Length: 116
Image 1 (cartoon, helix red, strand yellow):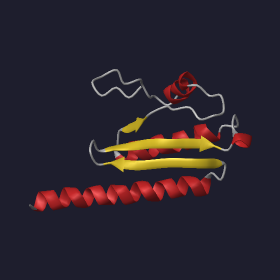
Image 2 (cartoon, one colour; image 1 turned 90 degrees about the vertical axis):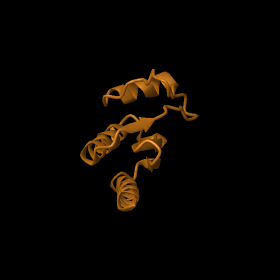
Image 3 (cartoon, one colour; image 1 turned 60 degrees about the vertical axis):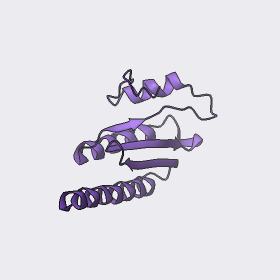
Image 4 (cartoon, helix red, strand yellow; image 1 turned 90 degrees about the horizontal axis):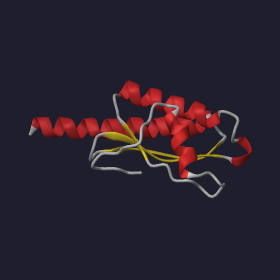
């Protein structure tokens, strides 16, 4: 019973840490239109659901800075990262997003739980 409570508390602590990090990103990078990060308790990973840079700031390296910060946070927190590259309506394709994420070491999941 004590172990279960400890594990539940650690989950809450990491959820708070992720929420704080998300707010910090938004504060550091006002060029972000929206970012969605959360801790997925089911698989113990950091899930990036959204990362949109305001259109007037795209192509200026902001997304790269945000991704570098997120990867560093995940590494420091010992969290695997899960993301699903879904294009927005600005003519960016899934292939473009996959290539962007590959620059940070991400690979296409071809396993049982393939997301893309």
